[in-house]
Structures are given as structure tokens and as C-alpha cells.
Length: 352
Image: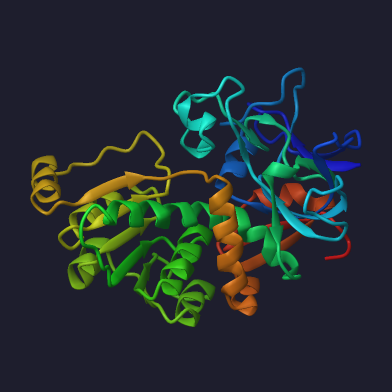
């Protein structure tokens, strides 16, 4: 079968290659790969900056945002041939830390976890793949390609969970949410914010095109002014930060309402120096009981919450979020971003 593979640590080594067909174990589903989503992590791995191949191999099958159709399932597994599924990305440390042992492998304390398509486990960018039943998520209905959005939606489902858990330390009834960044994570965070009944605002530097249109279609408000200006105007109760841009992060932290919660989901690149008034930020965070929390990855309950959220969303809105579809034969092209991209998807089956 064909798969999109890369040699970790080697720039521009992504290629579609023949790899052995998978053989499912007794506790695994055999799945026909339908599509994968492409994100910044995939591009970093393809750029040689990240990623680890499985033990004994020098190549890694990419793809952690999955969509597939069950071909074979163990008896009594709760899955049947034809079911749409997504595979969970992370696996616990083989010698688990306390968090992994408790099923909270997204909060691994020692870094010994493994991840499909990223760290020591082949990903889902192949014509067929296997997944243990316990790490498969059933996707109801037939939403076409939009099921590939489950993994990024699981990331923001966890982010919103973190916000709500922190808010519950005292009385908390948020009204206004600001999302910084209108990429897939930001737009999906906005979707989940509107599903919670909040007054959602999304900020991005783009001034026209599909991003403002998608925000408006949610009933949210789009901004492209500086973060400090927008935050002063809104005084948001919650900020979901999805850019990883240092100045945006600090301006968001400084701009919340009292008891404000900022959840950081964007990963910053190093090497950028900012001049900030750390004392003033510390004073404000302390005196207003503000909170800043980082959130990454997701575990099984977040995937299930994501599938539920996507099931409630407007299918046409989700479909518009996918702005570019690339066939497997040309999959390397999907790793080069375009300014008009929101979500890029590689199709693995001719059925889509």
C-alpha cells in the first residue's frame, strides 16, 4: 500500500512510498484510510525540525489528524464494518507516569509518551491502518471529509475543559470570549465557544476572505486591530490564544477582565526577544485572580467531546473550513502552506 513517509531530521524528505500492509492484532481495528489533516506539526517534521521514527526504522509515516472507515473489527468491539472512525494520537508511556497510569496520557509527566505520526509510532497517512479498539473514536453519520477535524477539535475541547475547571474554583459565569488566531484551532475554538452560548470574538491579521466569513457564519465578531486595543474594548472573561506569537500572548494576558482565564494553545518559536513590564503583568494577574494555563494534546474523553461538537455543528460550515484537498499522490504539496489555506486535507481514498 501507499503511505506518506518522511525521514525525521532530514529536510524535504517527505515522499509517497510503498509500505507493508498492516496486519491487525486481536484487539485492533483494520481501517481504510480516507483522509488526514495537515497542520504545523506535520510541516515541522517534514522540515527536519521535529519527529522520531519507530524503533528499528529510519522513516516515519506522517499523519495524526485521521479519518477512516472500518474494514474489520473484533467481535464485540462496538465497531462494525463501514463505521467512520478517528484514531487517538497519543499513547501512554510504556512505563507509565502517574498521569498516564490514570488514563490522563495527554498530561504525561515524564515525556515517555508516543504519538502516531509524530513520535515513535507510524501515523495515519496510509491507505490502510490499524488502531487498538480502545484508541478508536466512533464518528456518527457520514459527514464526508469533515470527520478529519476531530483531532484538532479535541485539542480545543480540552482547552475549554481546562478553562471551565479553573473557573469552577469560584463563581464563574463568563460572557465574552476572545480567540486570537483564525487558523483551524482558533476557528474550532470559536465554534465551541458559540456552542457554549458565549459572545465570541476572533482576532486575526487577515482582513478579508474566508476567515472573516467563517467567523461571521458562527454569529461571532471578527477583528483585525491590535490585540491590546481589542482586549481593552472587550475586557474578555476568557481568551483562547492560538497564535503562539509572543506579543499577542502578553497583550492577551494583560487584557482580560478580573478573574480572567487565558488558555495558551499556540506554540511559540524561540529566538524572539520582547520588552515587557513583567512587574505590571504580575501585579495584574495577582490582584485580579487571573489565570494563564497551557494546554496541548487530548485524551479519549476530549475526542468524544470533539465528535459530539462536530455532530452539532453546521456541516456546510465545517466543509468550508477545509480550503484545500490534495490527493495522496501529491501529498508532499500539502506540506507547503498557501496564504489562502485554512485547513489542508490529504485524501487517501478515491471515494472522497
